[in-house]
Length: 244
Image (tube, rainbow, N blue to C red; front, side, top):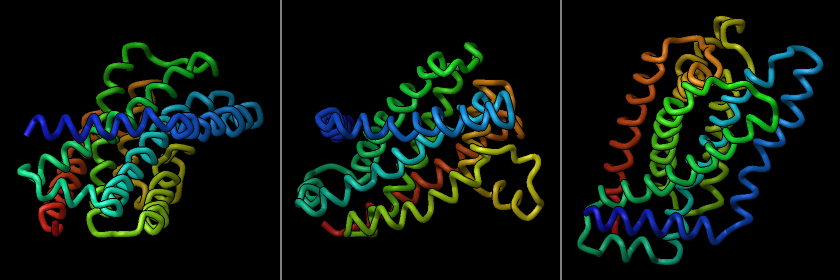
């Protein structure tokens, strides 16, 4: 089982590092948000807005990278590699875990790269919060890799996957408090924010890195753990139901 998980993880990592444009492209969007939106709004409206926004941008990077890692399953279906895995003497749980850990490693690598940009942009983060933030980043990435695998298990078209997933995660991002304080929004909108799992990931990162948050860290971590368990369980179930 461990050999199968490691093999699938290694395959994901090799694919990632061989595509340098993929790595550079994944960093371009968050840097754009920080450089233009963050600095622009900081100078125009709220002096500390860039600090406030920074944890949300780290979360955004992890959210999109993690969820879209599921598209690798669809390409594996297209080229017949998934069928070869299914007929091999390994469990479907191993396949899910191998794919999940590959996606998590890539997402966390990108999240850490953005974290290092804090010095360049003059963002003051709490050094004692860096290690806890890595744990939060792991929970977010693991949850949303599994979230992407859920859709990948039931779809065949990689392009359709990107459209459907974009339709779901864009509202999750904008309704997470990544770009605005959730304490000052209307009640009806606050309800949508509170049922969004990504809200608790952003809030936990903000608590760890700048010491501000709408909820307690314990509540954020509990919400993320529940979401992770649900998505991992559903992804594993759907992979077991997939035909070889």
